[in-house]
Length: 348
Ligand SMILES: Nc1ncnc2c1ncn2[C@@H]1O[C@H](COP(=O)(O)OP(=O)(O)O)[C@@H](O)[C@H]1O
Ligand SMILES: [Mg+2]
Image 1 (cartoon, protein in one colour):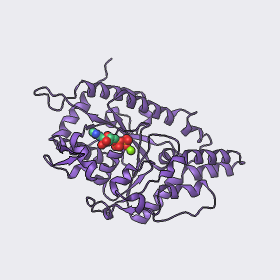
Image 2: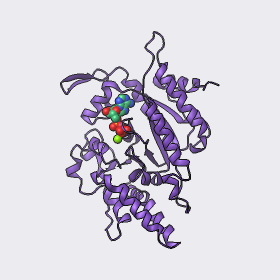
Image 3: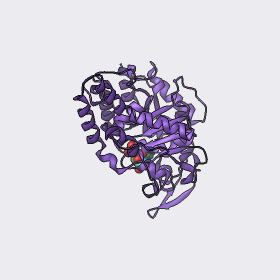
Image 4: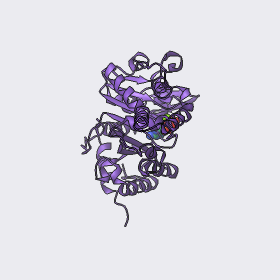
């Protein structure tokens, strides 16, 4: 039987037209944006959703630091403490725990004017996976129940630290951006968040990554589940709140406004098939609740990145030269804004 995507496409038409559609999803405080693949829009989403969320603590756990760069082009020299400083004391005994690591975004990004903060990344996150694996292996040699306590303390490090930072800054929401790899900070981010947001680009490699992610989430022998074999009540598996199909393109045929083109259609079907088969990993039991679409940003995205300016603040027709190429905010910018607002409304 062919997968029915009629409802998803219909809702999309209303969203594009600016109608407010309510989606019946539970609301959480802390989300991790992840998929085990790079270049699919994780950081772009984190940046734009953090702007819409307001009063949010954004956490950059990717060693590349692209999200930190959006908030402060000089974060590398400006930030005195970073996300690695928060995690390391849980792995290397004897190190002091830092406090007040978060930086106020409005201090370095002129487009933010609210009480939002971010935790800067560190390029030392590249070696965190091996440090974390060593610490967990060492803990496994210790007698129970100390072993369980040590493992729990390590795995909940980012949760405890982000909770503390939220309290110190008065932020009521938390959004964690991740690298394309599971080991290390992403592992800790899964334990730190209540639910996951998974961007999937309209290509087969992203579908493969989604399947790998689901396997990591569910398979008892995976790197994630293996460390929870002696499950303590505090260690939970996060559920998936939404899959966001990014880089969607639409039919160019006359009168076919907001109809997905063949490529987009095929990937909506593939994603819905996967959601159907894995529905117990999601926050509700209705697959249609969990699939969101985001257009290809085109020139809008390039200008947003070049200026570190949220898409929500760009207007159609604005243009600038990027690497000597004239780039313009496309007519589709209003649709992208409506899609981003819809995604944000389904989170908080
Ligand atoms: N919806 C989108 N449409 C078009 N380009 C996008 C979109 N989202 C992200 N991009 C672009 O794709 C590239 C990778 O995006 P990024 O958010 O850094 O991905 P990730 O964090 O998953 O590696 C960037 O050049 C970004 O500007
Ligand atoms: Mg990224």
